[in-house]
Figure 1: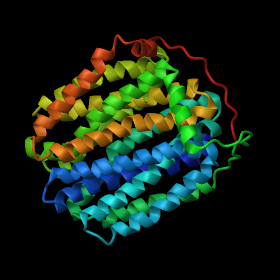
Figure 2: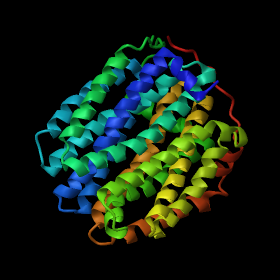
Figure 3: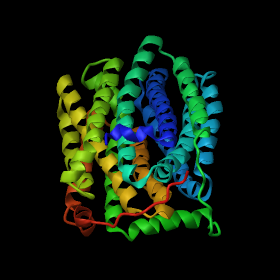
Figure 4: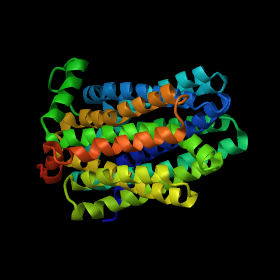
Length: 410
């Protein structure tokens, strides 16, 4: 059965289209806001670090709350609420050129996006029959990679033509309205809660406890943390790296991000086949070993076409890891912990992303772009390779968890 056959499921198709259009709008808007703030600040990369760090702080806060919220309430209603909540924040971007107001609106949008994502990912496991869950994860993974390609490319192109954000805000607004319509048409019967709800803090902590009891999940989260820190430094510096070091334009920055996304498409499509060669959690481990090496090569490369090829390979590995992790979690995590595990994994990547953005905000005027990137690449290498002999990394290689049976909610 082809991977796209899962799109024939009406409920999944609506969830997929709602999530994809929303993510596309977010990628385009985030790219344009990075370029817009860079322009408004007179090419001050410190503001890029603040923008990125603030966005990720609130994305993390939303993700922390999103786990227990998605576990406690009707997940479809949570998604609908988040779509509506982001609309007035987009309107506010129409009326300001103040950098701090832009940062604040971006942060608030990120907060509701953080709540949105864990419930969307967990909902897949409730509306898709068990044998097709991996295909559903593959479709979302490959689509996310396509959006990584299209979003920055579209955003950079529009900004290059207009130097403004109004057109992008309108497009993002339309994606939320379309998402609300599609989500409202999903036929979904929320599971009946038979237990008394526990306090949010206790429910969140129980998710952490579950992960700590499983060395394989612990390793996946630590690896995500390491990658998140490195990428958290890379993303705010990619614009000045492209312009200052490679001597290219803002449009070339969009092309670089597009090559990363193109690699992600290939990686997501290849996950199912490669998982047969490297089953269970072997694929997430192998990819995280190669990623720091690619980062080092990227930093020291000064040939634009070669930089594009490195980003292509890196994107392929990142999405191989992300999609295979989703499959592994779908296979091995109990339904009651699904939302919290997805939320914790997102947080494990996003929290160090915040730290990376803050480092740029604090050190951007002290060190050069090249020095900061070299430091991040070497740190990524140190965070991965010395841990390879540790028990949690060995467990990730040898883990063979039992598959979980789930009831489809229709």
